[in-house]
Length: 146
Image (spheres, rainbow, N blue to C red):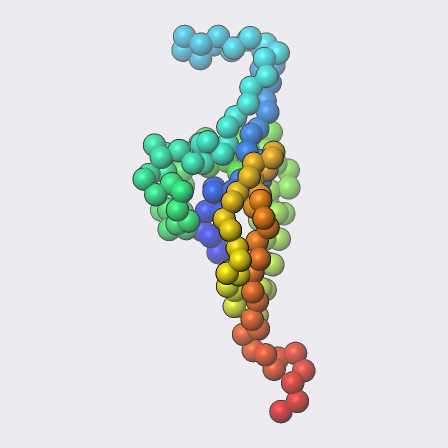
């Protein structure tokens, strides 16, 4: 379940850009970052980098999270460091509980009318929504009288 959620967050992070600001002058090699400069971290671009994730970067492949943890800065759906998302652990726990409850009770299929068209407006979301069909795994569980 962790691998599926992480791969979903890699492909469709909660925030496509993370704003940061230099609170002091910073020297990074030959680069000078002056105090007060706004810096935008392109999370979506990092999560979709073929160099970091391989040729199948745009494919849904939860197995890429089966191995050891990644180096810092490669996977950051909730930011990182001191200014990461304060609700990330709650959000992950909530997602796991809800998904576990749903997959234990229903089978899922994507509607034939679904068109994959992600659009980025601060977050990545489906342009036309996601139509899914739910089928109870045990139809008589909710009050059949047999």
